Length: 114
Length: 112
Image 1 (cartoon, rainbow over the protein chains, first blue to last red):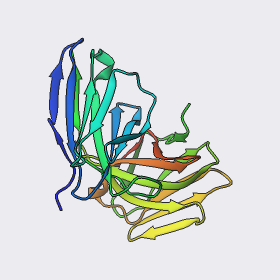
Image 2: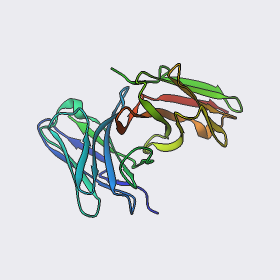
Image 3: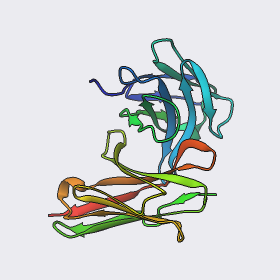
Image 4: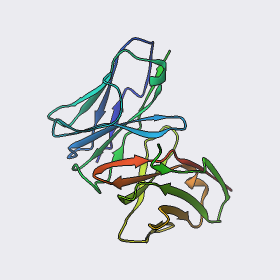
């Protein structure tokens, strides 16, 4: 089975711009979660989508949004980029939603905001 | 406030010896704990988990110990190998949420 794929792998943007990141989950997985990883901060949960519905949302401003399509692919959008948004954005998929569902992570998209 | 803490940012171990990575949590409602390993330029990979009804779970060279009264868990790697060099994240679920809360990670370096 192919793993979780994320595109693009690297992205450079300037402050004020917006960006869209894409995630294709493992075939058959219906839950997609997004995380932000910054140096020294670990993984911070952004949101989770299951069957095209946002199930959970982390403590991030409204500039961060996402959606999931009927084929379970997911996109994350960040508007009005700030320098502090520079981070590794990780997508994880799991077969179902709920506790004890092992998440499988993609390689991440490295976003740099100048 | 950090609910899951990995107080050692880095750990250096000789090949063949034991590596012990520690993790503390504050939320007594957490009931499921996971360890992930992350190599540079790759996403985290699930390593091993433990439910709060157990105090030990073993998978090959990897063993996770859970001390609920101390709100502490540890990952033991025996014997350590250079390929184990990576960042290890501890995560916890529970307390009404199944979204894992991650620690900040410990960078393990295993010297040949």
